[in-house]
Amino acid sequence: MNILPIQFFEGTRVLDIAEDLLGKIVVTHFNHEVTSGLIVETEAYAGVSDSASHAFGGRRTARNETMYAKGGAVYVYICYGIHPMLNIVTNKKNIPDAVLIRAIEPLEGLDIMLNRTGKTISDASITRGPGNVARALGIHKGYDGMLLQNGAIKIYKENDKKLRQYLIGKSKRIGVENSGKDALQPYRFFIKGNAYVSKPNS
Image 1 (spheres, one colour):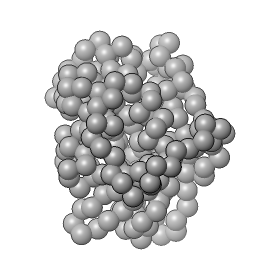
Image 2 (cartoon, helix red, strand yellow):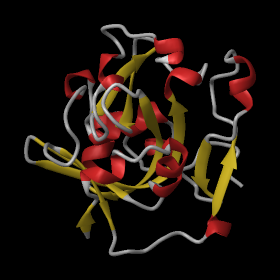
Image 3 (tube, one colour):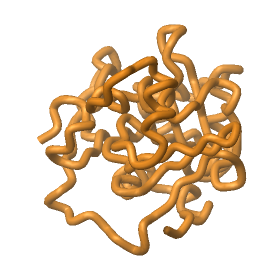
């Protein structure tokens, strides 16, 4: 496997990055525990112009400050006060685009993921949905602002393999119904038919 260069995340087209992350491998290495998974579902958030984004209209708070970092920073926020969400900041510094990792297919450290999520039997729900992704990978708010690729969270590509277009599905995002017209934007990308992908997955 080859690590994705940080320049990948500094690209200016967040939609392309969100789609290109499908089929890549996210790896965490915390406290001598390694877990990894194939990225099978993402969502793009297009900064200040996207009403579903935390940075819509240039909003800048302590909670979303990491979105204004340079591409490749890890943005972790807590949803409903409970669920950590793993996002990767893209674009240049002060342009708050980001990609949410919505689902992964476990590859390494499944026993560790089971322990972290409190499950005894593995099924597709272990890493389906962004809260489960972060929990299974051991990611919490303390990792917000970490620079990807230099720390304990990295994303790799398996050689130069690229997914065929017919395997990639696109749809509106999940859980942003109150975002006006942007709620209907086809900013969600997924590997069709993968069991770990949220519904709809075809």
